[in-house]
Structure formats: structure tokens, C-alpha cells
Image 1 (tube, rainbow, N blue to C red):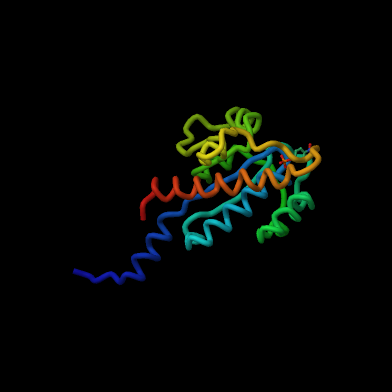
Image 2 (tube, rainbow, N blue to C red):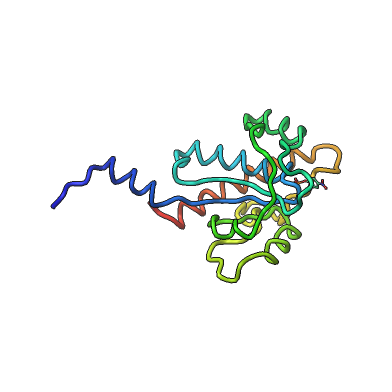
Length: 175
Ligand code: 4NP
């Protein structure tokens, strides 16, 4: 019988198992890029960057091609997340054929996504905060027009839900 090295096997598993996660908000300049940067960081810290791919998009088209809101970039930077390379794009029906998890920041985003979801979608379309078990919040509040600590609050909610999401994914797709 052919001997397969451990290294070959682990690379093969990485090649076979690629879980794709898409975060969606309204503008793709505040909440979903924050989730994108934080979750990607948590994934990399846990050695899973080769296995889990992360992206983000908005339901609206006002900010296509723009960098995240400077207030989001600044708040994230203080916690050592770099959002600066990200650029806004709009979610498409095609995303449902690419992503295993499509996670909405609030109920409005979720309703918009439900409207374009192909009937045969096999992945999970859900509210992102449903994976963060410690909070009763269901929506990540939109900080765009707000004052005060809205961006910190977004980060707190997203950090907590990111840990919950990674635990959930690892349990659901055991390597
Ligand atoms: P986001 O915030 O959905 O978290 O990116 C918003 C950004 C821009 C707008 C609304 C929300 N806007 O109306 O331009």
C-alpha cells in the first residue's frame, strides 16, 4: 500500500477543506469590514488561515471601491486589526455559490439577503451575532451616523461573536 506522508495529508486536507465566510452589512465600510478584519485575525491566530477564507460586502452600492470608514479603521487599529487594505463591494447572488457562511450584521441586511438567496443555497445565511452566545443583542448597531463610542461597541460585539463563530465552525467541520 502506498505510504502517504503526514505533510502531504495535511496539505491535501487544507486543499479539500476551504470554508468561506462572507460578512455583510449595508455600506461595507463600517461593520462588515470590521468583522472581516477581526475574524481573519482570529482565524490566523488559530493557525487556520489556509482553511478559512474571509470576505465582506454591502447590500448597498454607495461606497463601492472605497476604503473602510476612517473611524472604523482607527478604532480597529487601536486593537491591532488592520482594515486599511479592504475595499467596499456589493453582495451579489453569485456570492451564494461561493460562500458557506453568509453572515448579516442586522435584520435588515438579512432580509435583503433572503430576497436574493437562490433556492438551492446549502450554506448558512444567518445573523452574525447569533454565534456570540454571551450577548442578547441580535443586531450590530450601525455606527455610521452615530456619536460617541459606537465604533468601540461594534468591535466589542464583533470580537465576541468571532470567537463563537470560530468555535462553531471548528466543531462543525472537524479536521
Ligand atoms: P455599514 O455602515 O453598513 O456598517 O458599512 C453604513 C455605512 C454607510 C451608510 C450606511 C451605513 N450610508 O448610508 O452611506
